Image (cartoon, rainbow, N blue to C red):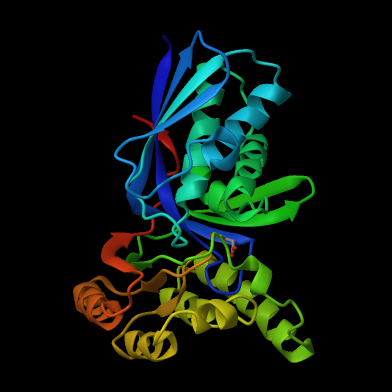
Length: 304
Ligand code: HSE
């Protein structure tokens, strides 16, 4: 039986104003996906210690759906067992669905020596995301595959640019949401002034990365007019906690991906204090899980 185990990092998509086009990879946590080729027909999914109730029907699971899309497109007839070891909190906007899909596509590329380009792998992995949010957004899967900061330059055809990041200290409070996705509540009618501000913020983020200016990076990512108003309204105390985190010395603070996790970027000497504050501030929220201290990472999926 041929088999490979792949580590897929947590990611934080949108990075403030970059809805569906920006994301970055985190050093920790990560999921571990084992792919084993079998003699039986079809795709089977097992989730180790499935306390998060991750779907195991391949069409409802991002790894299963991505694998099925890839195997069909490449006309590969094989049985496949996908064993998922979840370490990333599910349903919280920390990219666990993208990590699983990205790791699965990367692992299949390796097992069958398909020599796919990064963009082709991202394209298959993003199709897996339909199982989770109903939309083939590429931001999380691109950051999980490539690591670093990613910019989705184009969706048609998919074209992604990776930028290396300094190792930025991160605090992330994992908060789950009851819906699979809140994308349906987002209105894109933000008006001319906010549209201009949104475009300026996105440009500022890219410039801040090029110049390694973390203060500017944090300021630019802390304002968003597309998804943050909707998702912030669903997190009790969010706006006040965000202001306090910035007052405590964070470079910036926003909602991670589809929410409801909250992510702050800060100098290392402020990291523990901000983590302790966020842990206390969110502790009365019944959907709050834990607060993690981690770092941005330039490492994407890797075989272990
Ligand atoms: N860009 C996606 C969204 C990321 O905001 O819905 C989901 O984690």
